[in-house]
Image 1 (tube, one colour):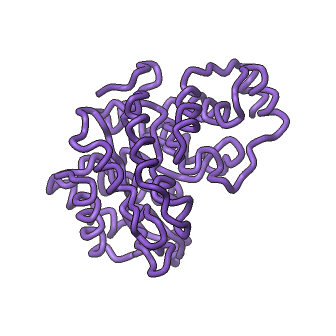
Image 2: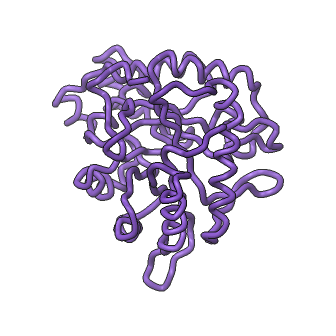
Amino acid sequence: MTPTNAKNTFRLGGDLPVGRIGFGAMRLAANGFTGPAREPEAGIAVLRRAVELGVNHIDTAAFYASQDSSVRANDLIREALHPYLDGLMIATKVGPEVVPGGGVRMTKDPQALRAMVEDNLSGLGLDALDLVYLRVGGGMGPDGEESVAARFEALEAMRQEGLIRHLGLSNITPVHLAEAQAIATVAAVQNHFHAAQRDDLDLLHACEAAGIAFVPYFPLGGGMTDLGGELITQVAQRHEATIPQIALAWLLATSPVTLAIPGTGSIAHLEENMAAADIHLTDDDLAQLA
């Protein structure tokens, strides 16, 4: 399975060709970590349509579930798509653990990561995971940064066992990236970044220099940010496109290493998001959006 649009392909880790617009699975089970369960059949239909449209990069996690854990994203992915097509890359993340009653908290215990990796393997029906992000939480050490070394070393040991193909980092700073790179190859970074949230431009530039995929979570604001300012609205009108489509096109135009993983529980929104890959922003558009 290869992306339908070769010009919008990135070779993750140097060996996995993925489409630059993928699919984020967080909203399949529920609309947030404390929301009620969504109908599983709707999520299954969205996943199958995503693959029909050429998606070959799905971003998930074992803790993506409804508040009562009755619906889990990994279970939906397995039911919808297993046995998986060759070339379908499934990325997951470890670090957060589910809190009884809803929500998640971060673990700093390297020993806890193996059970999380195994949970993803069994939930997805895989012998090895293509990409595993270490999600970093709050809590700073005496040097002003929370060390990721012990946890990243634990994941690298599992990579050497053959349980993981590539390693990534999520919610990090450039200091974390440098610390992890001294331990093993980092294939991808996943931070909060979109057209109206550009605090991590320096980190994006560091990823670009190293050939590391930069995969923003909440690429459309996550329902917490209104992207509809005057300038982006004008660009959308020129292209006869929606504001989310322009926001995704902007991400792809910002750097050759950016990958977008918009999530949705709606086939109509999925199709709208995928169409953004065909929007070419001009230099004037990019200057206006800057």
